[in-house]
Image (cartoon, rainbow, N blue to C red; front, side, top):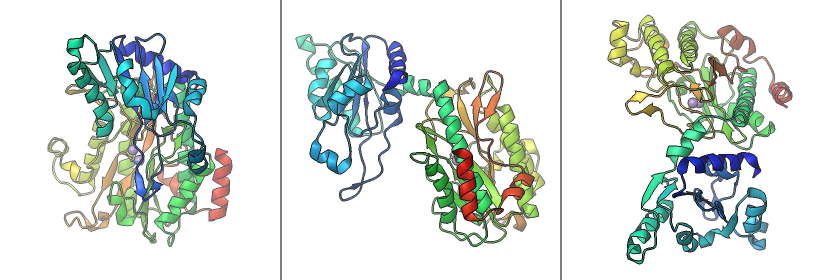
Length: 449
Ligand code: GLY
Ligand code: MN
Ligand code: MN
């Protein structure tokens, strides 16, 4: 579909070289129970190269074959099945609407693949996630071995397509940056709505509903990941997804939620007071994390190592842990001995894009790679004091704070895509709990329309 996918295929082919082929096969559908399936989300590589969203699909990309550089395998049209489970493009649609040179029913993949792979030496595949899929590649190698005496040539090596494709996906194109910015904007509206309505007595799942309502009503098709709505001590559980607790007066609420737009994901965390005001210990922790986050964003510069934001955040957080009496000793020792990990146990950043924890290498061999314009990463330091940490000063126990923004590296510095949600203490206290539910839903809905 569209030019963008054929341009990507062309670039992919140039990097693969003529004696090669790429086979990108869809994820299998997952049974939820009996004949009911989990929601299907096509794998990002396949979408990236084709825009084709149906399950049971394979793309075969053949740079050396002038007549058939792009072969698609798809579900055939089937009137009965389409009545039950929805429209299919079919083989004709694959050619007419998705730019396939030729298309086959997916059931013919195994029988027709050997012919297409004749003369191909290297086969690129999205390996390692589905044994059934990997088997296709292994069989292709085996076939070559078996037929070597007849002179038929086929693939002699399998290569992970990630080595090319994921590096392409790591550097975002202008269209992708636009989609990410929109995902960030909608994600921000969800967070603002949550802040506006939050009150003691609500349940975490009600906040989740408010946030996700904004996401969906803005036209987002699905969320980037399961929303984390963690109140009180639940905020010290990094990926808490139960979302079942009642919000108590005086709690902090940690909300980590983001939505998809155009197959690009937002990823925002804010931590805010359920009663509208931070307590003194909460504020002290919060200000340290906020300061760490700002310093980490400042460190996210083109040419800087990927870990520069993390190192900046760790330094400020470790200093803060000493200030709060959580840790004792010299800052340099705390950092060198990694004692900060007791209260900050995750990394500060991950790539962000089609997948919330997006693809692309983080290191070149032993050294962290340099940030480049067009890369997008999260900056999400936190500080978490377990409720039962008997060594921590009592006033900090059960406090968890994380602040997360999405940052695009630009030629001259960086751009925060998620700036639409407050994070200064005064701004947060000004917005929290200020609107009745209906008003907040309507107001935010208008802003992102
Ligand atoms: N929402 C998951 C993460 O922040 O990595
Ligand atoms: Mn994240
Ligand atoms: Mn997150």
